[in-house]
Each structure stands twice: as C-alpha cells, then as structure tokens.
Amino acid sequence: MRKGGTAHRVYSVVVFVILASLDNVAIGLVPPLYGSIGDTFGVGEGHIALATTIMFLISAVAAIGFAYAGDRTDRKPVLILGTAIWVAGTAWSGLSHGYASFLLAQVVASFGLGAVASVSFAVVSDLISPKRRGLVMSFWGLSQGVGTLAGTLLGGLLGHNNWRQPFLVAATAGVVATVAYLFTYNVPRGESQPELAGVEYDERIHAGDLPVILGRRTNIWLIFQGFTAQIALGSLVWLPILFRSRAEDQGYSAGTAVLVGSVFATLFQLGGALSILGGLVGDRLQRRTPRGRALVAAVGVLAAVPFYLVLFFVPMTIDVPDGAGTGTVIRAVLADVFTEPTVGFCLITAVFALMLTSANSPNWFALIADVNPPEHRGTVYSLGNLVNGFGRAGGNAMVAVAFRGLAGAFPPPLNYALGLAGFQLFWVPTGVMFWLASRTVAKDMADTHSALLVAASESEHRPDGDVGGDAAIGVEGLARE
Image (cartoon, rainbow, N blue to C red; front, side):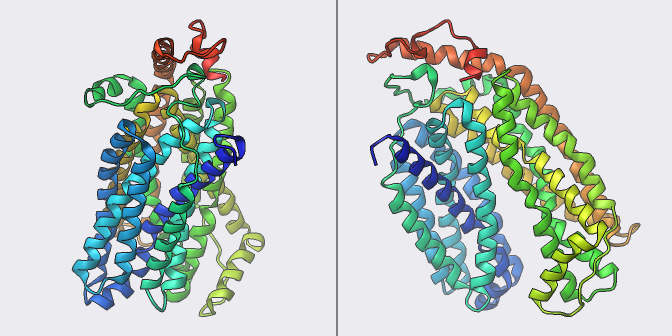
C-alpha cells in the first residue's frame, strides 16, 4: 500500500474503527459475568459491579490526559501506549486469583482505555474531509456501540463455563489490533482541512488554550448537551426490565420473562444502527448551511420524544412458550414481530425513536471537528466524554430511585413505563443545546477557518493555488468542502 494513498487511508480508518470497538468490548465483558466472578472471589455481585463503575469513571478522566498528550505530541505512540495498557489490564483481569488483584487490573485497563477513543477521534477527523465527516463518524460511533454489545455477547457465550476466557480472548484481539495499527498511515495533523492543503501544519495545544477552547460558544453546547442526553440514554439500560415486567404481568415465569426482556430490548435497539442516516443527512444539509449538522441533531432528539412515550405505554401481547429453551423462546419472539400487531408496532416505534436520537452522535463528532483546529479536537472530545460519563451514571442511578418511588402508587410494569418516559424528557434540553449550537457554529467555524489560513500563510511550505492560500473563502464555502 502506498503511504498515504487511498488504500492505505481506507485501511487506517478500518483499523481505527476496530480499535474503537475493541475498547468497548473490554468494557462490556464484565456485566454478564458479575455472578461468576463474584463466586470465584467469594464476594457479592455489587463488589464486581464496582469495577465497572470505576472503569467508566477512570477511563473518562484519563481520556483528558491522553487527549491532551495526543494534541501536544505525536499521536501514534500515545495510542499504542494506551492500547498496550488496556490489553495488559484486561489479560491481568482474566488471570487474577483474588478480588483485590482483579479490581487493580480493571483500574489499569480503564486507564489505558481512556486513550483509545479520544486520540483515535482526533486522528480520524484528520483523515476525513469535512464533507464526509458525518458519514464516517457515524461508522466510528456505531463501532463503539457494536463493541459494547459484542463484549456483552462475548462475556455471556465464552464465559458461561469459564469467566476468564473472554478476558484473554479480548486481550489477544487487542494485541492483533495493535500490530495492525503499526502499519496505519501516520496522519499529518490537519491533513483533511481544505485551508491547510499542501501545508506542513505543526501546531500543538498549549496549557493556556483552555480559555480559547471554552471561548468558542459552540464547544460549550457540544460538551454539556451530553449530560442530559446521557441521562436519557443511561435510563434505557432498564429496557430489559420493562419488557421482563410486561411478560411477568402476562403470566410468564421468571426465567422466560428474563429471556423475553433481553431479546426484546436487543431487538428494539436496532434503530441505533441507523445513525448512518443521521450522518448522511447532516453532511448533505451542511453543504447548504453551516448550521446543518446541529439542526439535524436538534430536530432528531426532539422528534424522538413522542415515539419513546408511545413505546413505553402501548401494550404488547407476548406469545411465547413458557418454560421453553432459549432457542425456542428467541424464535417465538421473532415470530411475534410478524404475527402480533402490537409487537410489530412497538418495534417500528422503537426503531424510529432510536434512529432519531442516534442522529446526534455522528453530527456531534463532526461538529467538534468543524469548529476546532486539529490540535484541540482530542481534548474537546475528551471533555465532552467526561460530561457524558457523569450523565450516563446519573441517569442509571436516578431512574432506579424513580422506579422505587413510583412502585408504591403504580404497580409494575406501569412504574417502569412512567419512569422511563419521564427520563426521555431530558432529550428536550439536549435538543435546545444543539439548536443553540446551530446559532454559534457559523461564527466559530469562521474564526477557526481564519486562524488556519493565518497558520497556512505563515508556513514555510505554502500551497500553490489551493484553498489554503485563498483568504477570501468564507464559512459558507468551507461548509460545502
């Protein structure tokens, strides 16, 4: 592959997408194995769940340091170091023979995981031209969700007899991905920016740049929208409980109800895969106006709220053989989609709801790249990711309290439906913040564009006859690039 050629760049994007998914595989391994790991170490499931909580928190905080290091120095060694750390921590987790050792191993793994998403985001943004950012970022974001699901499946399928095996498999996959990463294109900072075409851009973030970053008003909205968005998303981890409760309310045994709840929840989250459409629409509208991506995200999350309310309150008639085996129940659930109108209607409603809310993810990624110079993108992403982490943890904790409070007046499954419906209202401030971002994005893009043109004009290797040397190009033209 020619260095920097089309094939090499495609290979590099694929490797980054795989890396982004693998770090989420590592995060998703533990929850299905709480009981098995706890039994081995003689502790309760809550002690093992603590490892997951710590992993989310430490990885979010560590991401800021790694992102700053990546924006400040050569990003490739930073990403290799981070990957090596989480691989070592994951392998150590699978080899641990005591709870303290396992917890420390998870801390090590989570520290390394903080590097992968933030640094690889900055690299991918430099690989992709502005006009295709939404589409490519939708694949990159989707890979993280797929990675979490794959981790859950890997933990359940490989770990049901030996919980250590999934950790060792994930660590091995991490080693293979790291080797593949060694052959990726070492992307020059700012390579995809039209203003910097032909320019050797070597700007780095500095300790005093935080006021500059926060001075871009769009960054404020992009960072803080994640808090309310993730409260709503965090509550959706209770979807299996809602559907399990509905099955129990219809007379199914506990074991069958748990299985029904898990299958329905998985089916109903398929709409998240349609985030690709949100990225495509954002790219298309962005060519018309700099407000395009932000408006797509705002409309998407606001329009999803009514669909969620319908999903939680429309009754479902479940028809599966009670007490049957796993495969039989799964086949019956899939058949219900086509034979039971209420189930089919709920599935369509869920797909639309998740499709609309998932439009925010690729456009959020792309907006960060649009309004920030290359040397700031990883740090801005990590700040947003930190706020996202607190929002998701808060949503998960608060909804449990809400369910308990509602149970006194509303028996299950109504208490779950009311609680989940209430938490979807957090999409409203999220949509408002994206709308506010749409009002400031043109100015922030123009300011960043001007700064990059100045950097290009001062470079010793100025382009000859391309956009980088044309100070007359405006933000509207940049949005179409």
